[in-house]
Structures are given as C-alpha cells and as structure tokens.
Length: 301
Image 1 (cartoon, rainbow, N blue to C red):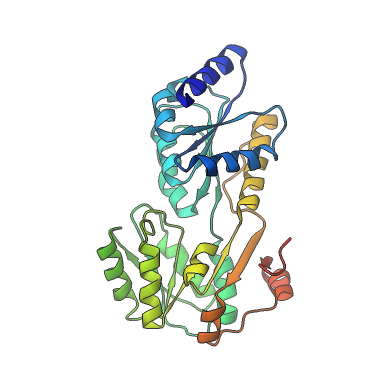
Image 2: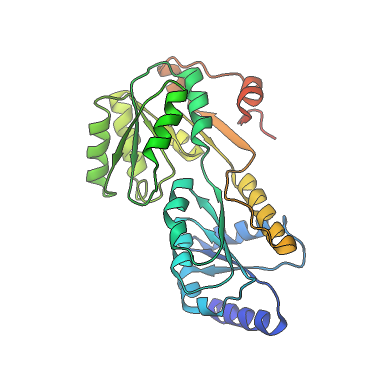
C-alpha cells in the first residue's frame, strides 16, 4: 500500500509540477509519523511531507525532480540518498557533523544538515570549567567519520587539553580493546556522534567498563548521560526540527541552501551520581546560560 501511495504521489507531483518533500527513513512507523507531524507544523500548510522507507526510495529514486526536497533521517539514509541516482536537494537530520563530512563528497546533489551533538569547542569550554585532570582526552572513532585530528588537537590546546586519537573497527571486541588501550593514559573518553561505533549495545558496554575503572565519558546525547556518561551537550528533537524547517522554507522560497550547522538552542545535562563521585561542581543554570549559551534541564524553555 505504501509503495502504491508513493508512486501515485510521484506521478501527481510530476504531472502537476509540485515540489515534493520526502522523509527518507528506516525507523519505526510510529516514530516517523510523530516526526513528520512535528515537522509539518513548522512548515507552510500547503506543503506535504511523505515518509518513505529507504528501500522504497532506492527503487524509485529516478522519479525525483530537481526541485524536490529529500529529508534523510540518520546517517544511513543520508548515505543512501547520496549514493542513489537522484535529483533534488537533500537535508540530513539526526546525523553527526563528522558523519556528514565523511559522506558528503559522495553526494551528486546539493546537501545540508542539522547536526546532532554539539560543537567541539563548546564542549571543551565547559569541560575546562569543571574538569581539572589534564591527562589526554581519548577520542575513539570509526571509519565512518571524517576526523581532522590536527584541527581538533589545536582546539583542545586552546582549553588546556590534549586529544589522544584511536581509529577502531566497530565490532564489540575491537571497540572494547580500543577503550582499554586508550584509558591507560586517560581518565576520560571525549565521544563524537558515531552511529556505527555505538550501535548494538556497544555504548552500554563501554560505559559499564568505564564505571568499573572509575573513568568517565563526555557523551554526545542525553541518552548517554542516562546510561552513565558524565555530561552531554545536545539539542532536543524540537530544536533540530526547527533548524530543519528554516532550511526547507529558505530553499522553497528563495532557493538558498543554508549551510549545515548545529541548532542554535543547545542543552546540557549532568549525571548526578558521577558528578558527586568525581567531585565535580557543575555551574549554575544562570551561569551556563550566560557564559556558554546553554540551557540546563531545570531551566530550558
């Protein structure tokens, strides 16, 4: 039924000259319905969003028109759109900056993105204020990221830190071996948004290992804080969709493709148990807002 609906929508938009917007995904139907509904409320009322599974999009990519908008949900959807024989413009969401930079060169169509996580310099600035152990910060990442180690090292130096990098395979054994190796000289993992590295419960395994070693991670999302990371700076779904809607409207009305970036509104959450265990004194909510432009969970509109 969904295949028939997609094909009918393609044909009608082609015949009537409509610019269509497709949400390319591979997530649960209830989740994509909720996501599409939230996004549609931020867009002009005459704009229709059609959720399309990645497999169905791949079969019909040739029917996409130059002025169609492809909204890719997650890293794999963005990769598939970029590798397909498609037209239009693609806007990625729920993707890390380093994931986006890795895939973008494969894109034959214009692209932009709303990044998950937070800028490295903002995370380092907050870390400088609360963490006084100057041992190297471990950065473990997979081949699915484009990491500029030199640029990141220069950023770390500005805040009095040093990065220790290790590229790893993404199977559980390789990842845990890498974690054990880098933590010989470090107390902390400074994580990046890395979908492949943390899938299939590997994130939980890493956090359990860190807990037993009395070492910590700076997480890329609130989920990591709940699972055992020291803190995370991130954006919620509402902020991501607001930034995405701005890009869609700008493209539709002025044919201007805004640059890929993080949402303006970023949140910070601390793990209360780990904060206490490591003697960390988190800044007040007002200081977080005034100094870093971050809203805490207790004071975030």
